[in-house]
Image (cartoon, rainbow, N blue to C red; front, side):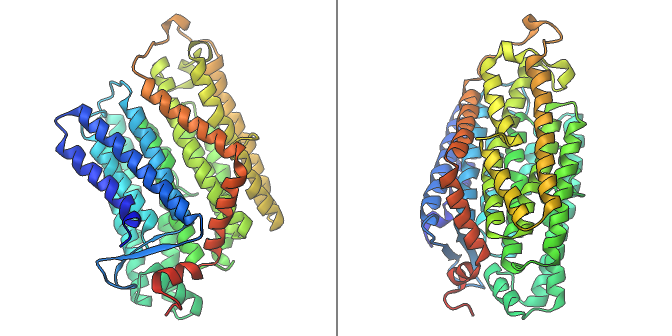
Length: 497
């Protein structure tokens, strides 16, 4: 099997083992974690450079031919998701190197982080439904342990909500996988796509796919099953909550995009339902954010509303809309993780999460104000930042498809997002600090975190200013998604059986 194909699994797995072996030396564990994340980023970028040429890399672990072997596949979408996973993982490790007194900053953090990355990368490159379930389990175990790291009653209460809802979704997914196998005789995605396209599946298989999409909707935090996310993400240690905010819901979004484009590529009832769910998710998420008074709770509700944009692209299913969904994924993972990092630093400087107790950061830490403004304006869709191009493409795709309500909701959500970001800016940065500016904290040891948030802000600027090449890649990825025969042939051989 192609070594590069399995590198997204081998690198974080090897890093996990090395971190465990070196756990008596925190400094060495930190260095190994940093090197492992950098290696994963390099492997992801190498995969993007290959996938950009249109090649789909497929392999069968254990030497069993598809559909019986464990299939791994890299196309344009999965390659860019692996690369971004590496980048966010690297930023998370850097922020975690900053001096902090949170009890979650223990020796278990780095091994658990790389265990989570194994699960995330596995979900992005697997080519069969059962192993998608396995990788979901791996990342869930890692996320359960990470979110509860450091203990505390408030953190534990949020974890219960997170665990219960995700277990429900996982059980639903497992039940759907069993039904799908019973109805079709296969769980290989390429073979399933071939069977569904030929109409050789009974109604039970379609029902199983529908149940599976409900499970992924819970994991992606779509309306009306999003409540677990704002109840839990803001309670974890800052690097952990930022990693979750950037990556975890996107695994659910990725699974929805992969399954719908492979199994139900033609517009139908499922796309109609997804369209209304996307509109409701955008609107309810952004209104929920408007009602919050803590920085990370506001940002958590905004994850919900922004996921709605991605599902809007999937629901419309035109080449432009799918390209918009891919562009949105790329932009949002970077922006959202960075906002959580900055929100955590702002909380450390002011000693508070509530906006009423914050203030004075523009005068006290102008560098933080600038670094906040870039992702915040991008999230709201202000030109020429990355969020503007992502929203522009999706609104244009909606208008082209005569989806007037969806276009209106997308524009309204952008306006409300800007108001939420303005609220954080006014309360945390412009307003005088309630205790007097002299009472604001001087926090030492933030340099690694500053490097990370500066790099992510630079990425946001680069995606916006160089939107052409990024959109070209997203459009090419959308072409592969809209024409799944290439994926089927790469896995099963030509012609598909």
